[in-house]
Image (cartoon, rainbow, N blue to C red; front, side, top):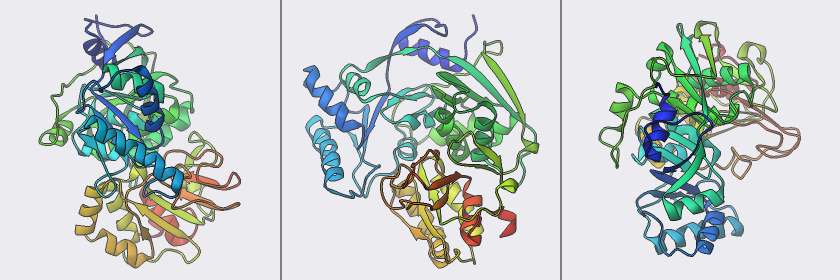
Length: 420
């Protein structure tokens, strides 16, 4: 019988010919990921299990990225737990400050996740790797501990929803706008514990950077994962960088879906998610004029090179509004270096923006961009919950990098066409 890409991947990793939605399976994992917030808990639980060694030191990645460079003593101690455990277990994939990046930008770049993989991470945005055609999902720290010991974990096989995108993209519209529009249509629980499968001619034309952005925010719709069938663009991305063997899976033509949505992208303009939910989306034309205090460009959602180029295109030859702070966070050190070589940093600094080493800091209200009471930010991040970026009485609006950059210039939420 037919299966979706999600079902095929889980069946292969569970050693079964087929699986059905709702079925409980034990599946081997290809990569286990933790960061400086979630991994310390997992490490403590791992030590309670009583095993001396992790299942495979090449298949565990520890990335300190949330509170690094460390902002205080507590965050320094959290990071030290990762560092000590990585040395003790001789982990291949520990990434120190200066060599690291935001985890969900870093792992694909380093070739540690690939098509057909099962990846779990103690971070909800692990779903990012679905852009490669992997089943990737977030788990709790105790599940992470068990997987570090056993090399497997259990899943309830999710139902799948198909999202089909057709038509011609409008100027300044990309993956961020498509996923915000989608979440706006189905709600933050519209795909609860379901596999979101993004497909159609528009998805095939998207760059890998835009695909990562879309899969990254599947969790904002409640999705278990967000997959895109791998194609030649995927192959070009993984060839030469993949550290492990990979397998391309495609959904069968007659695979079963719980729902199917079709969107004509020619009707979509750049989107802005208003406070305090990612589903509260409106076209940028309905947001224009809202005053901002801060613009944040970066994160695991939009910190890739394509995103920085887009922001630079808007900021080139212009100045950040005198009443606005513009902070730019490249996703990894490699993205940082490439952006520097291309002269993007010169554009940003000339415009009056601050450029940071990779960190998740402001996205989770951690450090390097916290909002005070009453302040308002536009950000290319993935969440805008109450207090997400600082004070509970601050506000966060979500957008693509071009909208964020234009807003930084004009001091209010703006269409890129108003600037460029």
